[in-house]
Length: 72
Image 1: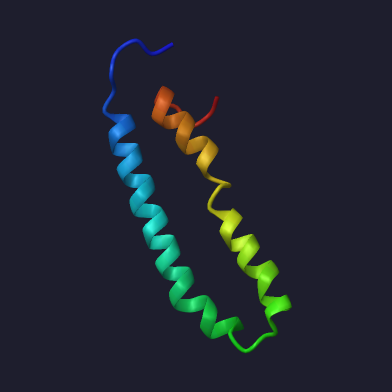
Image 2 (image 1 turned 180 degrees about the vertical axis):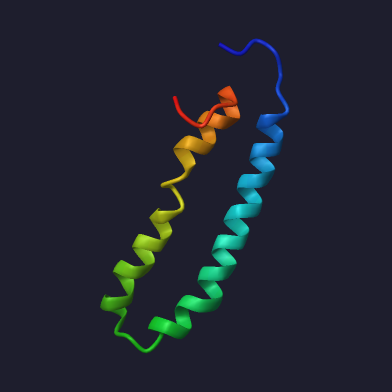
């Protein structure tokens, strides 16, 4: 268990915010061009998947922020 502050947490939060901003800008820029002409019911699953996809690497990133290792 960590008892002293570490630089990984504030840097990790900043990196997470930056990565989410870049991800959302890329999605907002390119996805509508690809699926904008699809019916709304066909677009919905795509946006749901893309909205959840950023969570996949989050677990390992949070482990790194707390422990300094990429695996639990």
